[in-house]
Image (cartoon, rainbow, N blue to C red; front, side, top):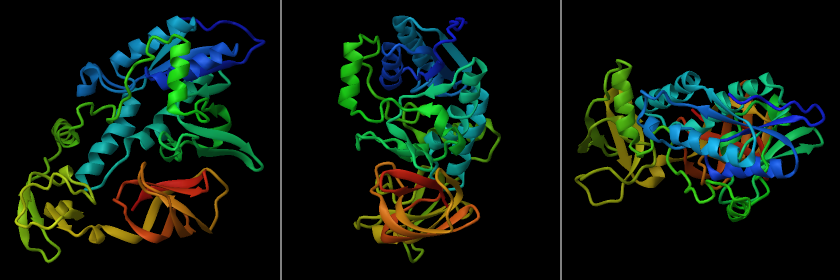
Length: 364
């Protein structure tokens, strides 16, 4: 392991490097500005574990090598932090259990909550760092009442939705250098700085399911855990009439239209309800999958908590924020939306005031 250079005149900054171009540019810009930087990469997969171990997306073995090459190019130390056990327990297990329960999990949110801004930040402080920098497209600004998390400048790349669960107390210890940039600007910086991964393509799939086969991954992990495999069942309409059959409720999510198979109807159908106990998937018109009221559980605040507020709520990464009236009791929020939307149990629901993240949780 490379030692950290001793330079008390310049505070130490840890750049979290995933192996991708975004985090590499964030680190390179800091180095170019004369900061004392150390690269730190998370190893999230046991080499004998998931399919992603053979070259997955984000923090897999191949990405660790890409991050190491970036650090060598920048002339900075590189640490690899083994967080496979923590990642498996907090992110992968949660993902599997949620799908088995008929929910739609968001592992990126769980990773930011339990991995990137908790144990990784602890490792950064252990080597004397004052600041953790990542390549997220979001902004942390110093507002009148403390630090605030805000959307990134590029609406097509904004990742604030995934970051609501980071610890509020740590906002001052984290920076996102790319938050005010577009993706094209970041690519330009990567080329200008000669980064070895400047042309690396983006990852679109969940890092530990690189082939995109979520259902197959859940089935394999259920077997590994000694869990009963999700069994086949019926696909029914709103009246309970059987239209077809399926191979497991973990293959569906609320609002899904594609992948319903050959049903005995020509109408355009969407998944409107999932009942794991009965192994039943209900389908109907899209309107039947939508709701104008929802409950957010496990509410986490990145702003001073309130008992009631008017704000906007976003329930999908690419979903448009919807104006809402919100009443809060303990760690739950009752939300009345101005327009109905599909909100699947387990999805992240994030509360915004303009571009500022106020709070967030999971659809109950």
